[in-house]
Length: 212
Length: 202
Image (tube, rainbow over all chains, first blue to last red):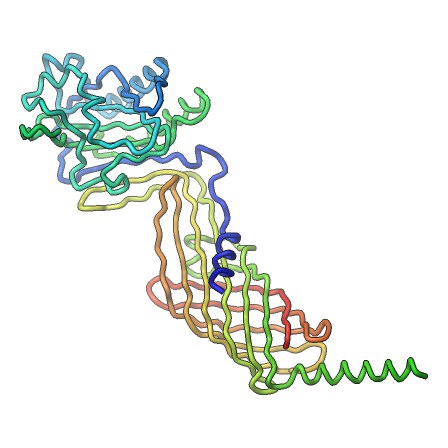
């Protein structure tokens, strides 16, 4: 009888998404303990870190499009961009990452972001490396970045609040805000651009506390 | 003459069998296609009429007019929410906002003890009234992209029902009926099932 019911449940439950963009998701992470009005300037490194299992690379025009759009969103929200983080620093750093595979362990994060010369400005430069840490946990990611193929991440870190422990292990770098566009890198170039454009708009709409 | 005798014998046998099938001591298995109309708070989540459902019942005729048994089945409701929707989840004091295309689902599986009173247990149209009492496993969930938000409950409920049975052939009847489902508790589920199916007596 249970098998009969189970078969009935499975066969009677309708499908759901018909189109790939029906599965697109915008996720944002907010820490209510953070006063976002305390932060005014940001620096956006001039690269999108591309994490992939194969040797593919992110198309440079797509990379430029993504960075321009992120800049546009934050400047539109009243944030000021700094262009020389090695000399001037910034209140926050925006790290933009495209993930083209699944189950990326966050402890490898330093491998992806250690190249950035801007870390040299900040007093707590993590010599053992770092990984992005979401205080309280970003529950839906379970401590491990497990995203649908083709996810775009925008993570706002506060480098000045890094606590360095010289134990040979990477230290957690607090992410005070995070946004993810889940799955948007699937499809044709034009469709991907439309979905990134729409998704980043939504990311800011869902984060009104970032607007100055 | 021999043919006439045979015809009379078959007719007599058929009529006596038909009478005996309506008598106490017989079992009945019934299966129905059950399109269903969500009611009450269910319509806030999954408001559309559903053509996806079925029911299965077993009953035993303890008296000429009265049978007892149990019933189960599946009803599924679905709504493709227009536009995009947002959900906020607070976890460990942090706020995660999820925005995307949303699909809502409600599945209901009743487990009911049933009693049925046949107003006219013989004849070509056999109307009946009944009541089911028991539990409903109600599964509600929303899907946003690859994530789902679930709320499953097992709740107490009642199910008055009414319908007619129409004998089609020896031991087989057609069933037409309706059943109102009402559960109680914090997240009540209610619906009206329409039932079209067959009943086998043995």
